[in-house]
Amino acid sequence: MSEKDVTITLSDGSQYQTLKIKDWNPLSPDAGVEYKYFAPGIGMVREENEAGDEQIDLIERIAP
Image 1 (cartoon, one colour):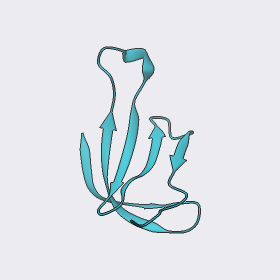
Image 2 (image 1 turned 90 degrees about the vertical axis):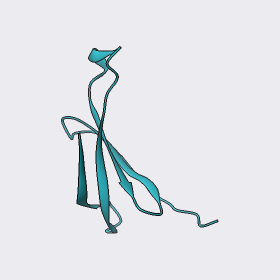
Image 3 (image 1 turned 30 degrees about the horizontal axis):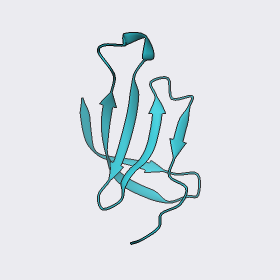
Image 4 (image 1 turned 180 degrees about the vertical axis):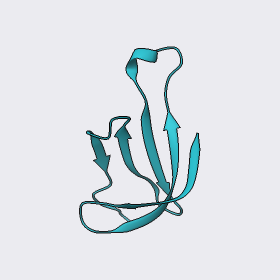
């Protein structure tokens, strides 16, 4: 499952239009489901569990 143009706001207030991807391991169903959000030109900006009560956000971006 994936969704286009999902807007997310990070804790620092920055907003991104993202692609939301459902991620799971069929060999380990007890591990649960995660959602990953990818912004164009940046990469993954958020990862959260299915319940939405745990998330990891991008906190710094270093341009090459």
